[in-house]
Image 1 (cartoon, protein in one colour):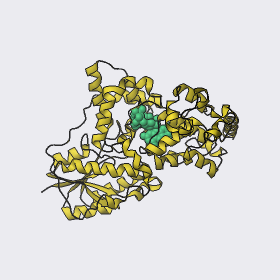
Image 2 (tube, helix red, strand yellow):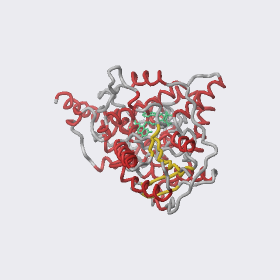
Image 3 (tube, rainbow, N blue to C red):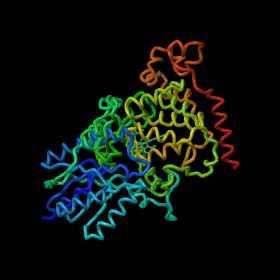
Image 4 (tube, rainbow, N blue to C red):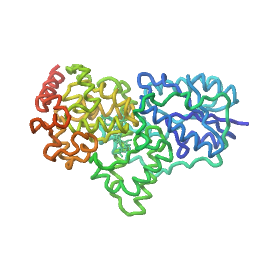
Length: 469
Ligand SMILES: Cc1cc2nc3c(=O)[nH]c(=O)nc-3n(C[C@H](O)[C@H](O)[C@H](O)COP(=O)(O)OP(=O)(O)OC[C@H]3O[C@@H](n4cnc5c(N)ncnc54)[C@H](O)[C@@H]3O)c2cc1C
């Protein structure tokens, strides 16, 4: 009997899963395997919020496979030796997986592929996480892109209407002995910090499809206009589902296309696809410039006079900077494992520019606390805001958290939600509680840790060091 192993990684779904389709089509039985080997992710092993998500996503996939009379065989690493042991134990003749693009994982997978092939095992890897592999979108000179707009133009022109793949049917699943339990992976945090996450999220493919339905039915129409308003559910909130591969860009596009065709309202679709394009772009940058995950892409920033100050960093992490929009964002992150994109830019700008701290301090905190922590998107986001990355915001464009709040949270709903000390503050003080002597203190809210204007000027002075060498 011919058996193929499907090595699940961050593709925790059954639909649009090319490795699963190949295994089910070419072999009599499929053994679904997940190997827990966080050390193989180098310096970027999943953080605490990601591990919370992973636990529940594996549980959901397990339940989905039970419906097909099988199970997800869990093992604790290392990956190569685990696959070899499973091949030996089951007589599997092939191993299939979908590609990942993080530098440490590309190196690992290349080595595993080569070793298994040398041992006579059939190995194949497939594309599903992105719209296109990073090497399939290049300039006319066959170079990687450094600027989003031409990258997107090229990628957009390549996108056809490829339908997602169906779950193979029938799916004949093989079982193996000596698997680990989900609890043995020890993914859940010991303290109760993440307990509230399940009010906001349902990890797994069904949860992803629910979010997508919501977007298709309702949110997409307003996406172009409302996506910058943090108080509203104006974006898809699909980022953790996309990160863990519970849904693919192809699945999202097909569903949204159908909804748009049915309603006759195109609005929202193109802006949404363009955001997904940023995700492909981030992976493109990480793949072609792998050092960008922990070093300034623009090396001139190695000269920037970053300031280390642990106490200040802690105030930022805890949402006690005294700047309402920054604190609201940091508290949303702590409570839900997610933060709105506009607010991510503002808190990142406050940390790197006003506070003058290295973007990696922020990237590390996000890495541990975001349920959608994604090495490509996170590194690109932080370097973009810091000004040290590809296609970065010009350095002198420093977000002013007060004017941003007035523009994007004009009624202060977002601030009132996440900063209870200011819940009943009059509107004119909500964005600047320091404007009236004694007001902030009377509410138990701190004064701003920095003067906005002075700290902006210091950031600009630091930039002179970058420019002049
Ligand atoms: C400092 C900083 C750090 C960030 N860290 C992460 C991270 O670790 N993981 C992450 O997924 N996103 C990150 N982002 C990008 C963005 O904030 C989130 O993808 C977005 O807020 C997720 O919400 P959504 O799914 O509702 O987005 P939507 O607006 O609905 O967008 C749809 C999808 O497009 C992708 N996307 C949107 N914006 C971007 C972007 N700027 N870069 C790359 N992909 C994007 C995401 O996969 C998202 O789910 C970061 C941005 C900044 C400024």
